Every structure is written in C-alpha cells, then in structure tokens.
Image 1: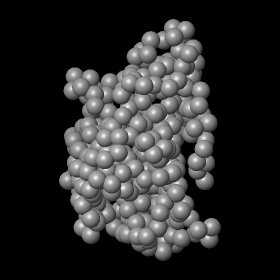
Image 2: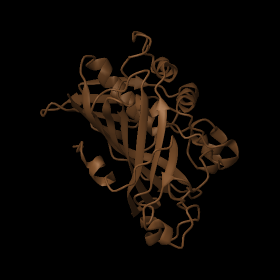
Image 3: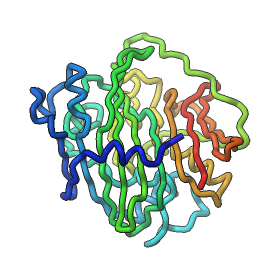
Image 4: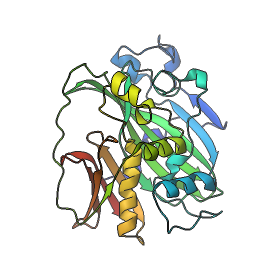
Length: 322
C-alpha cells in the first residue's frame, strides 16, 4: 500500500522555489546536450529530466468544488463555503495548467517541453497514482503544490513502446502538509490502423456495493471544463475516433478515480480516507454504461474497481480509511 513518506524522501534533494510559478532543472541538466524543449531520443536524455521541479500557488475557491458536486449529482451535499473541507481528490480542480492557446498541440495538450519531458510518443494518459491525505484542504486556503519528476521508465507493451513518467506532488498550506501524491503518466505510440487492441483482464465480481454510471458527452465535457483539460479525446469524437483510433470519447482516468471514491462516500459517508491508490487497466468510452464496485476487505481497507459492460477491468483502486 502507499507509503505516506516516500514522496518527501524522493523530492528532498530538489531546490526550493519561491515564485508563484517556476520550473527548475536538476543541477546536471545544464551540462547535457539536449535543450529542455528538444525531442528525447535516448535513455540518458530521459534520465536527465529526473529531479526537474515546478512549484505553483493557488487559492482554493468554492466555485470549482460546487461544479464538481453538481457533476457528481451530489444533491444532498451542502454548498461549499469558506472553511469547507475538500473531499479527497478534489485538489485536482486546482493548480491547473494554463497554456496559451497558441501553445497547444493538435490534440489539445500543451506542446512538448516545459516541465514534462518532450517524449516522442503522441498518446499521453494517466496511468495511476498513490495518494496520502494528511489533512484536508479547505475553501479559502492559499495552497502551494511542489512537483518533482522522480522516475522515468521505458517499457515494451502489448500495443507498442511505452514510457512512464512519475511526478511526486506535495500540497501545503499555512497549516502544513495536506496531500502527498505520486502521479504516473504513460506515453504510448499511435494506434495502428486496423489493429485489434489487447483484451483486458476480467474484473472481479465479488463486490459488496456498486453503482452504474452512464458516461455521456455532457459528463465528459463538464469534467474537462472543471479541470481545464483540452485533450480532444474527451470531447471531440472525430479526433478521438479518426485520429487517435478510439471507438468513442474517452472517459478521463481521474474522473473514474473520483467516481470510485464518490462511490465509497455514498456507501460509507462518515468515513475518512487516509490513503488511496489507483491503476488504470483499460479505457472506458461514452458508448456504454460502466459499473463502479466496492468491497470491504479483511484488513479494513476498501477495494474499488470499475468494470466495463463486457466484464473487463477498467480501473482498480484501494482506499485505506483513517
């Protein structure tokens, strides 16, 4: 399960930044022959990005959380006011990237370079994450998120080459550390015309509680708007199907994770989540409903997973309760 202290240990050697938004490279990055925005072609170039750090400040306001509660159909939740605690994973509504329109690629993502390495694999998606919730963020907080690239790995997948990038985040306020997070990003090769995607593993069927979600384009648009996510696979059907080779609009990985924790909140409304981890197994699309599932485990944790209409696993997760 998640180690609540590993993020701090991995990031401890990175420089401390004071501006509201800044990027710093590790000490040896300046001695490489690769400019920060040049395509990466070798393992040594990839490794040179480890230790790169960015810091961003944000004001935790009520409007994004109110929008998320509406999107999740949380009809009985009180309206957020100053001092209201954010539910776990709601920090994803803040510290958002704000690339200029001219700096977006044809897929809606910011152009290669900047903080993340310019990996020459065009399909970029969330692969998973591990989080520890030390104390809640609250409406009205001024918060700081410090992010450091901690790990980069190249792998060979069933559908082609993969590159995984892990970014460690620490979010703090004047009260101290609130959230530790490790975020895994996967870069994939483009879909080959006519290629049959690998069949995902079957999902478990021993859930204690479940909920069915219909991921229509309105839900995906609203979540894209809340997270300022311009990736066209979530709202532009022509791009998703004709350019990136998906059968329909893709449900956001962080939205699925948020829905899984929302399922837990519906089933166990008085519990507090201390740790959460999730791994994407296969994509979900706006073509069919999918099922959110949960089960209390013998060790007191809660297993959570998302199952597609054919019974295949889309995401697996686990929550440790406080």
